[in-house]
Length: 377
Image (cartoon, rainbow, N blue to C red):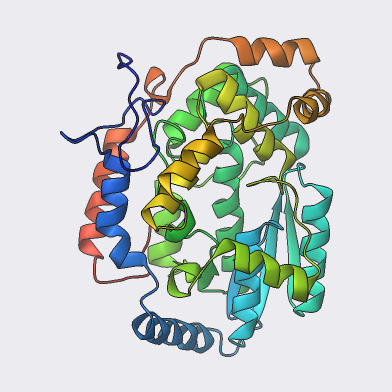
């Protein structure tokens, strides 16, 4: 793919660091246009959303009759999943909280999860990945020199949640994902984590261990859980008025929740990847996607967003410490980590992948089940 001359959207702040971005004749990008055109389908719409949420809650309680739990909530210690836990208990749902432990939790995140489980009286399970195997998979993705350094975690989370939900007979998984704060994310910045052809190629070419225990979640497994096991994913934050700052304050006041210093910094690895690795290696500033979404929802002005982007997304002093910690935990030298970061950038299209086939499959699925609002991908 040929890199185009630099251009930034005239409405939001997305730019040509997304190599697949498109602009119309007025310089407006496809991301904010698509967001605005589809936002009405996912926005909180007052009484209409309240009624739909009541229906969903009633459905979850009905499916949970005779069982210990009505739903499963994935928790990370972050704002979204913590607030989801609060909402589910507010509606009287019997919740099983599940944390997928990949070995990178911050101290604040661990404390947040414990406080939430205790104060909300929620049962809690931890799904712990085999560290040596997972570490090798993470290193493989780093050595592949692609932006998808977090794909191993993003693949393991739904695999763990569906596996545990099926074990307990739970039919509803509540996700902290939401359109209001995460509606824009370029594919070139984070390609489909469920593309197992891509995943297997990367781990085989750049990894050193045979994968035996790591939980994967490709199309066939997803269809099994959705169609055979009838497990649905509920994006509950799309049905409530959700402002992150307000949610954070509530969590602090009621659940002794502690802030961890930045978006997704509940995981030390995720924070490092999004603030430093992507920025230095690919010139990807992850804040752009969040700010672009907030511009579209009128939470932030474009002028303020541009001012925010004038500063780097990381602190040199903090990153120096983080690099030493991450290199040590990955069992490589600091020099090797620097060499990996300095390698020429690659993208998902540089390696074998299943993009076309999966795109056709998921588009077909959406058309077939378009009336089933909870069948989300």
